[in-house]
Image (cartoon, rainbow, N blue to C red; front, side, top):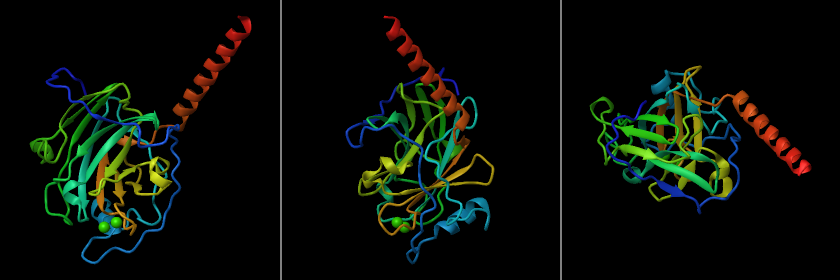
Length: 256
Ligand SMILES: [Ca+2]
Ligand SMILES: [Ca+2]
């Protein structure tokens, strides 16, 4: 994705004071036990069946421990689609992406607003296209994505030094204003409000959020395409580079 047709710069929002200032580590403990599905709502398993095919992905057994992703393609084009909202606060729920490596400095960008296409508790068709580059991302809607800017999709160009196509997480804002991050340790009390499921070996993922305490984990379900868990090797190399820099720094201090 290139950014040659820049029309406007829209500022995102910073979240800094609400979370503890600790390095973000990709360590979710899964699986967690699912609660019963309320009458009149589709179970998470039913939703997974409709997206991946019946029986292909198990809501109970195929929960991923991942909480951070990167683009599966070099130039980073990602398409999230809102699958279903099953909650009383559906009209004011939000879904978005966050960037950062330390909880004291997180940049968040809303993708979906609550006003999705379709009635609550039915399968949705709202979708958004995202292009991500270093320091910039562009969010678009329109006919291809069957969504409206402003009411359903947060369209615009977003600029921030923390935007990184190789490392990002996701979040959900409930109708009551609670934020649920894709990494448990970032949540108030470290609770689990997020489940991730990979569609077999594909780069298609389902994210399933809990907005309350019944743990049915289908209050907002979103499919995101073209993402993958960052290679452990690249993180290890980064660690080595940092260790090398630290060693060099120590040597300099000794010589001084
Ligand atoms: Ca729930
Ligand atoms: Ca529910």
